[in-house]
Length: 509
Image 1 (cartoon, helix red, strand yellow):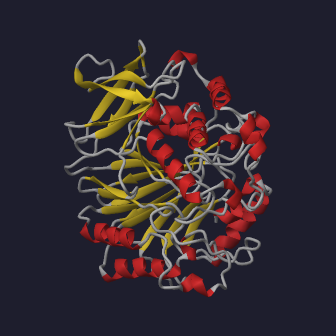
Image 2: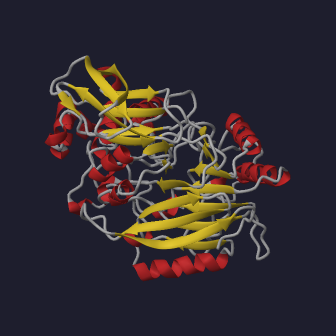
Image 3: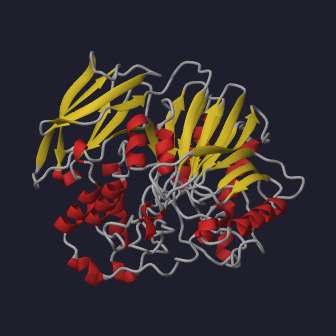
C-alpha cells in the first residue's frame, strides 16, 4: 500500500553531491539549533524510556555540548515520586562523542507493574522529568497500548504524539516504524508550513542520519510522548531508505555508495537515538503477565529478499523467497506456540492480510511491498497458526498511512475463515491519500475496497492519528483517534472508530 501512497515520489529521489559538499557538520548543527528550546539546555531532546520488562527499563537522554568534547559525565536518578523525595536508584554514566552524546541506562532491580520517574544531570543542569512503567508478572484486569507509525517532519507537526502524551501512563507505545524519513527537502512532504528537512539533502552518512534524528526529536509532540510513556519500537524502511531489504533499496542508487555501509550507519544511529536494548537482531518479545505477549518483528533487515514489483514474475511464488528469514520465522513460530498469555500481539510493519486492489488503485493489483509480496512464507505462517490452533492473535500493522480493521484471511472469498485479527494504524503525519486526491474521491475508493474485500470491515485513508488498543481477559478494544490538523502545533483529537474482539472469536464487532 505504501507504493500507492508515495507513487508520486518514487523514482524522483536523488542525491546532489555538490549540495552535500557545501553543507558542513557545524552548519548542520547550527541549522538544527533553530528548533532548540533554550529552557531545556543542554537536554534539548528531552528524555525517553523503552523496552519495559518486569524488573528493568531503558532510560535515555542526549546531552548537547556547546563545544566538541570527547565525553561528558552524566548523573541519572530514578524515583517512585515525581518530586524525587526518595531516590530509588542513582548512578553516573558518560555521554560520549562516539555515541553522539546519547545516553542509555538499563535500570534494573525495579518492581513489576510499577510507575517510575527519572531524570538526568550534566553540565550543571537537570533534564525534564520522565515517567515510565515496568511490565507486570501477575494477573492483570487490563493493558493499554498506543500504536503509531510513519511520522514525516515536512508533512506537519507530530500532533498525534502530543495527544498520546496527554493520556494516563500506558503500558507501552508500540512504534511500528518509519520513525524518520530519509528524503531531501521537498521530495516527499509539504514545506509550506515552514518545516524543512535538515540536512536538506537525502541522508547517507552517519552524521546525516544523526542530524535527521536530532531534528525529529526536537518536535514538541515527539519529545512529550517519549517523556510520558515507555516505547517498544521496531524499524521499517525509511529509517534506512524506501523499500529497503537486506541487499538493497528502491531509494538507494549506485552513485550513493555502498548500501551495506549505509544500512550499518542507519542501524547504528537508530540504536543511539532510540530507548532500546542493543542486540544482534532487532526482533524481540515482551511479556505482560497473563494477559499479553508482545512480539515485535523485523521485516526489513533480518531476512527480507530483494523487492519484486511485477505480479507476473514467477519468482514471487518461490519457496526460497522470504520476508522474515529462516531464523526469525522459527523464532516467531516458537513464540506463538509457547505463549501462555491470552492475547498474542504482533508488531508487524507491513499489511499481512490479503488485500485485493485491482481496478481500485491505478497500476497496483496487489501491494508487493507488503506480505502480499511473500505469498509462500505468508501461507506457512497461516498454516502454522491453524494447525496448532493458536487463538487470540492481534496483528498490529503500520506502513500504509491508513487505518484498518481486518478479519485476517488469505485466499479471500465471501465464505472466508479468519485466522486472526489485523489492526492497522494510520500515519502520525506522513501523506495519506487525501494529500493527493479530493477527500470525496478517497471515500469512494475506500468503499470500493471494502466491497472487494469482505474481510476488511473498516479503512480510513484520509486522516492522521494513532490506534489505542485495550486488552481485557475476555475481549480487546481497538479505537482509532484522529487529529483535526497537522498545520499548527495545537489541535483537537476525536474518536473515529471503535471495534471489539471477543476472546476466542476472530471476528470484529
